[in-house]
Length: 247
Image 1 (cartoon, rainbow, N blue to C red):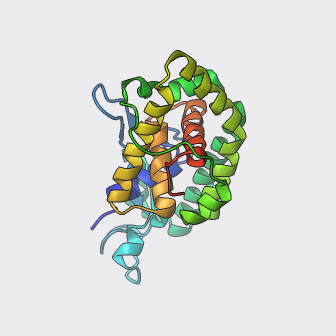
Image 2: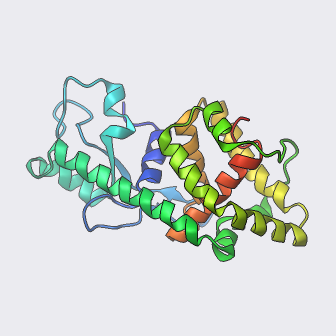
């Protein structure tokens, strides 16, 4: 069956768009000349996808095999290595590698919130100038805890939101400064996120899955950690103050 496209996007987000193989560090995002950038990493199965595949476990269901918990984000070369040299890469080793890599990515993101400043925010929302202002929604403040419960988000999402809220004053000041130059800026900013949010909702995504897909969208293929984190800081700012996520 294979992992779904949204699952691959979530895996890429958790991996920071970087190959998880030790000392590889390859950025697996293609900078598109037209349209959105593309994730080009591979969602490698830890326990094989089908009989005969490396580390195949007959006791698993197809859903379990294609779940993000059984996938590790790799470049083509290292995906080939773990499957061709199976003895060197048992399930326990790959699970530990995945956990360590994704933990490092999350820690780097959370630590970078403290350094979010106007230059990074400008890069993160450079797409806004081409966005049509939003025609619906609101900018009403909602308590984060209330919104987290409403959207059925886990502690993992809660930690990202809590870390992101440390940048709230900086993001608010940036949005206010931009609005002085362009009164439609806040509405265009909101519009871009709302369009993506409602599109994902229509596809049936919700909870943590929806949150992580929105985080990936907020990063828009950016490679620098500071810029990637700034994109998520903007998302969390909107999470608190408008209709991006249910209130």
